[in-house]
Image (cartoon, rainbow, N blue to C red; front, side, top):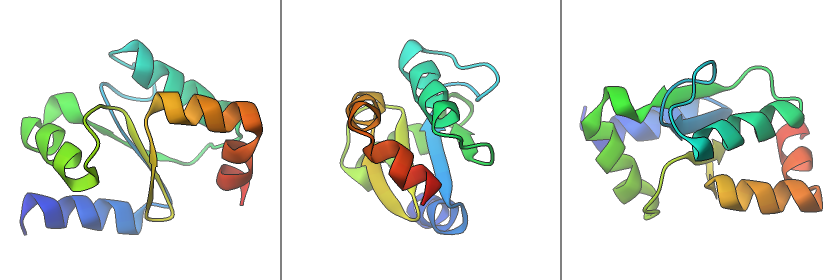
Length: 102
């Protein structure tokens, strides 16, 4: 399995997956902490996180996979949503809550 296939499998098998620096319990950057906070505020209790700091190969490959240069990256139901900035905008408009609860 290539790294791209591994990422695709992770995204396809987890309804909500966040590629981040650190873990949900111990984020390693402010943007990742913000992303986790927003998911919790939307009522997401069962989401998967991938700590890109533990796997440099995934850290680089996820950026290429999504064509998005930064971490964190959120995927919901197989769809790339964006990073913490996009999540913050979507939360402010109510879109993120609808997406997460839907």
